[in-house]
Length: 527
Image 1 (cartoon, rainbow, N blue to C red):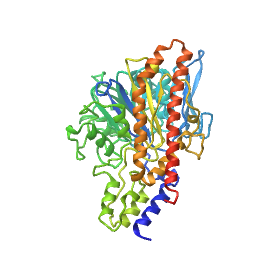
Image 2: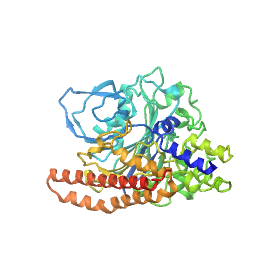
Image 3: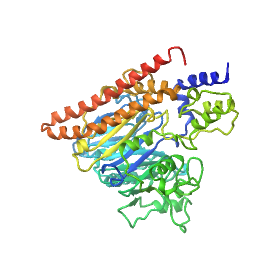
Image 4: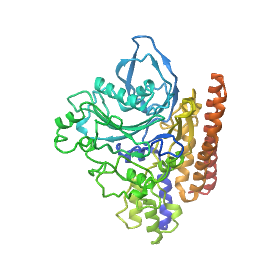
């Protein structure tokens, strides 16, 4: 068999393998990305936060309704809710404790990491791990449960941060180092939290507001440095943030305090930096004039972009893979192949190759330097959100979560509004456990995986489909807002909004089902 034929065959076999190999290959800290945009940095005055949930997490989601509770009601706090197959599945779920229930809770969008409530409070997430010595699993709250309670009880980002701080102090934080990117229609904050060490049930945290005319990125690295608690408009922190660092000998109390240096120490490459490839790349794309380079020890938490940032721009960045840069592994492999007897680059590369594929290409192309650089979009993504919050509109239509399932570099986005009361039935089921036609995930994943096998041939169809739905959303959003506001009956408003989301979602499913059939026909003679 000629060398390029072997490459094609092995690419196909590995490309259609199950997700388990991919998940095992990734680091737990090398998982999610969040881009934040202040209201004066966005193209239309929106505040934006976002999230790519890049691991084997559930893809079912639902709208949890607002509820009232009698006095002295208690609520349970859980662990293990992110890997279930549907809302009633309790496999692996355990109660970690109980707290008093609020008299009234707000409606919220219940994704694996809950993300949007009826008051336009939006939350993104990214894990940074932090120092293992800070973890205390006896703490009651995992990060997703902190987000859930905040969405049920809070209307603003500041209120959410204060509530989470109180819960951490009283009941303890039991997760690894985590970041939440918390936004409302007026501002967006980055919130980082860790345990207080094995001897104390509690936690340490800091929060920094992103200036209204700036953007920020968090991608599995602690980003917050100096904190100025004399400026409460831009900084908040736990009352033990300095004391714990001294006690754990993470800060000598003499040099300027840096949250990331004390509680994280560096990025997931063990470099003493508060950023890695994704943060640098996205900031370079949005603010090229700043001249950010990889030899900087510290990247600013936020920066003013060179031009205003739209939802579409965020979507494309979350779907990006360094094309046209030195970080693009597929471009490097294509270049090596072109110089060797291996021809036909359209057959052998895609932006989301796994380590075992890369090793194979390195051997066949006689280049031992090939290595994986974690792209922004990844094939093991469960779902992604871009949450758009708009102060000039009623909450019900002002808050929009633009959702995609599977790889954000290939899948289309559809809207879920803060005012939705129900979601399409196919979103009731997680597709991670097995192939199911009634799970929305597989209607995207099947087309995406075939597209990846012959990416150079199929990318135009995929990208045209993504752009179609970005354009559709932008074009139709004013109609949705005006129509909803023109209705006077609450039931009519709910029916209209739920119906619009259902129809938009259904159109994406139909389009990707058509792509799957098209790619299957194109490959009728084999891969």
